[in-house]
Length: 149
Image (cartoon, rainbow, N blue to C red; front, side, top):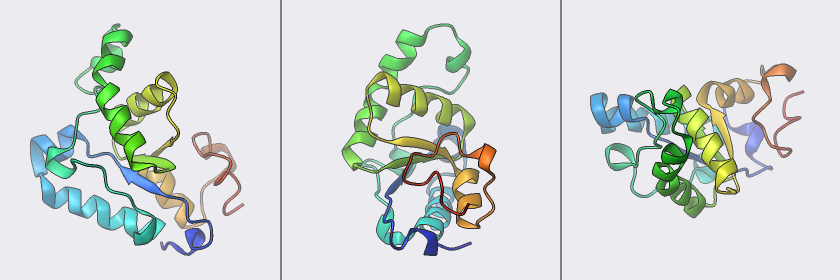
């Protein structure tokens, strides 16, 4: 697992700190671990930090059953701040280790006309190892769609 695949591409990434994992349980130490992994697979120079971040990062608005609540307008309005925060990084991709965050951040990107793609953390790890299958590339943008094929 390394970042050689991104040395010439210079695709940029930011990371979402999931509420359950970071803010409500393990705090900044696990947020630091998350960043360690992401930087190793994309290159430290291609990582853009959100502000605020780690234990102070904003909730995406999709957790706690809100995705399934039947109130998409309220959920999207709650996620507006997260969409603005991701846009401010200018990153091409938002990495999400949580499936609720992934679904919400993907949705608010479309809803608020964001300029990023949303990736599961495992997708990025597999891409960096050269073992991401053709059928596992749904969320990759055209800049990464053929990497490693």
